[in-house]
Image (cartoon, rainbow, N blue to C red; front, top):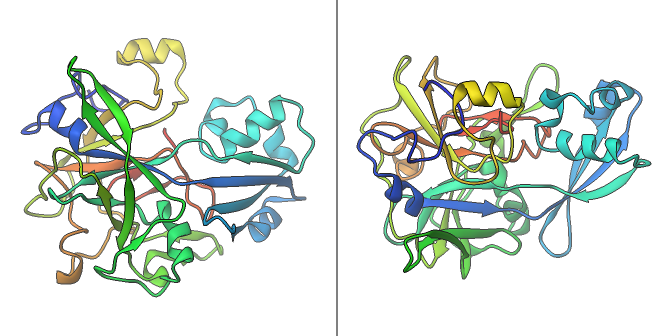
Length: 309
């Protein structure tokens, strides 16, 4: 099973019980509104894209598309990613642009200690960074999140797992924006140090240890998260042997091909939030959101935000 969205019971991670993984994972739920409109070409669409902070602490993403994008609305590869999914759905519904819609989905994190410290992605907490003026970075400086929510898994008396809203969520550490993001040669913002540290109350009932060393090329990597959908048809899903993504916890695995440019820097200051997690290598998250800067899928050494590929 080299790839796919498998349940934790179907694709077991060596040295990690499925129930422990369930108990340690955390759903991260930003509140984001999309304003979708048209632009004459792709360059202009990128130039006009911007994020806006709203009075309630949430974010509004302004994203622009082209006539060529309208023609792709029925293409599952195009429509599977965040922002593109909402755009394609609006096109199929006959919307007249601009339209304002909520951004579907959320992201993932995992607990790293019994006190509720949770490692997640930088791009999931950008609204809270703006809310609290933390663009210069902050270490071990807790501020309560205004709009970001979290859910933790709890096992009921009947043995079933259910997601419960956290009572409170705190942003603990985040890198400076200049380290977390940068513009490439084409002027497109790319995520680099896509990592942040939260604290959730009450804490998850389990946590994951960090690996002893970073992932090397060829090492087996497991990714866990909550993908919403894939671009695979029924025949491909049957051949791979798994149900399509539906927002439940899933696990994927493949050999690491190379270290990525968005890998966090493992300095002493970030030792608690920048190493590859768990045993022998587990990453989070398979995030169902795209980069807030570009609306595109991203990948980091911490885990995958692959637009639910």
